[in-house]
Image (cartoon, rainbow, N blue to C red; front, side):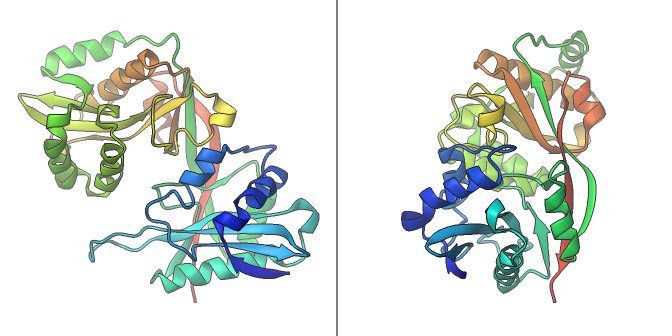
Amino acid sequence: MKLEIYDPKARAADVLKLWDRALGKDYPVSDRAFWQNTIGNPFYEHGDAFVAVGKGKVLGFALAKLERSSNPEHEKHGSVGVLMVDPAARRKGIGKALLARTEDRVKGFGCAECGVATPAHYRFWPGIPTELTPAYEFFAGQGYKLHRGCFDLVRDVSNFRVPKRVKEAIAREGVEIRPLKEDEVADLLTFERAEFKGWEPSMRSLIGHREADHIIIVKRGGRIIGSLQSFSPLSRMRSANLIWETLLGADCGGLGAVGIAKAERGKDLGLALCAVATDVLRRRGVRNAHIDWTGLIEFYGKLGYKPWREYWKGEKKLA
């Protein structure tokens, strides 16, 4: 067995076949979702992924997930985005070898820690799915400190209606909630830099995919005071909310990066924003709406969202 830097031209088809053997039963992935979260990720660089090859066959694959930024003040984050080994070749040291190579890549990027399935942008999972017990045992055995409490939520929105409480909050606060318009992009980015600096890059990605109208805003008196990202079957960008279209259906969608300006919180505007966005998803042909990476089960539960998956999250100090 030898480790090689992943060459998508030579190895993509083999890695997708490996995924089917190793993870296809629980997490079948579409070709386009795999592509976007690997070499289709604009932050991906050659050398971030590796394959283990034995007797001419791909036996394992690993992806180092690095949060690159042109901003020198941006905190560096790195993690194991994917690690999988052919079921017929497990317990032979392949997983450990791939993990060591991935951790070296993360360390070389300048990170003191390596996480599991994070950071946020262009990811498959926000952590280790709790039903994948062997994966948990593997990472725990390799020194990762793991904890539960991160969830994906799903709701069938085909019969969704905006609750009376939300309509009352919108009227009381004198706000409008609707999709962003092209001439409001600059104002939206100013809002994100002031209130949610970490979400500006992903907002720019949506805008760059010509999907500004998938950003839903709260506006009062000509000023943006809240925003979120939404995704639908119409989306060009296959976000984490759409990554499991093979499980949730081609008509799946979702929302995330929900934020209300600090001075405007406590007025039911966050709930109103999510409710209106959910109704927008319904009107755009979504059936199963997916909210990933959250612990706010009670909050989203007010709109009928329920837990779908739970994850182990954690990290390891790199020597």
